[in-house]
Image (cartoon, rainbow, N blue to C red; front, top):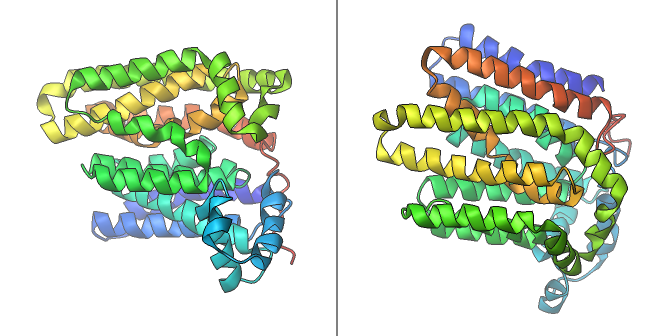
Length: 359
């Protein structure tokens, strides 16, 4: 637990140190800050023991069988996530250790999210803090294969913000080849359409589809049968109890973000409007998924692909809050810390106790 506490202390502490003490250009400070924090996050993730994270041991031991297999076209077509197995195969050649999986996955997860935050966030310190307290980083210590896919979806979001739809499509395809449930992120391609009616239709269809979740869950489980155990009532209760306050706060902040956007709309150039609207659209679906996931933990696994848009929304809204920027930043940071810390104390995802790799 001490290792995780140290991470939580390090993020704001290093941020204050760089912003107040070191006399460098802003962009240079930003780069050094991101490298410092995410290198630390990488080492803690990459060199954890396979006992850290409920699913980590099954991922790690898969290397033993994959390392002995020969890659072929037929072999790849037999796999639901061929790119994932190719990465493991290559990784096992470079690092012939049981630790291979953690190293490879940590490079991808920390690398993609560090780039995503560095390039697209209006406040790297707040976004990095939220990356931890919204539990995305700690989730990656457990469901690391989905976290790799989420990192690639984050890169796809970046391409959409840069108006590079073809590259976004390629990034989503790569995510699907690592974790097939990434198909649920395809609608983000339609959330940045110049036609407002298509944007609205995409949100409405997505929300209407989510509302029909009992039927859709059965369809989902038919294609991804290994997730069937999430339909157990026990998981419903856990999901409801842990997320209700967090989801309510996120909804309140989303409404506040819409208010700030409307208030400042006339003073924002068209390109910034497009980006702000896209992030708002994605966050809207994420919030709707958040409320639905109170009844199903399986929906939570889908929600992850949308809810990390909050990493961009929070600092973006704070940046347009004028004199209240610092106050908005502090409130978001503190309120989000509470549910995240509760999850951490409970060791959600089997990440406690933290143990370094023992060979």
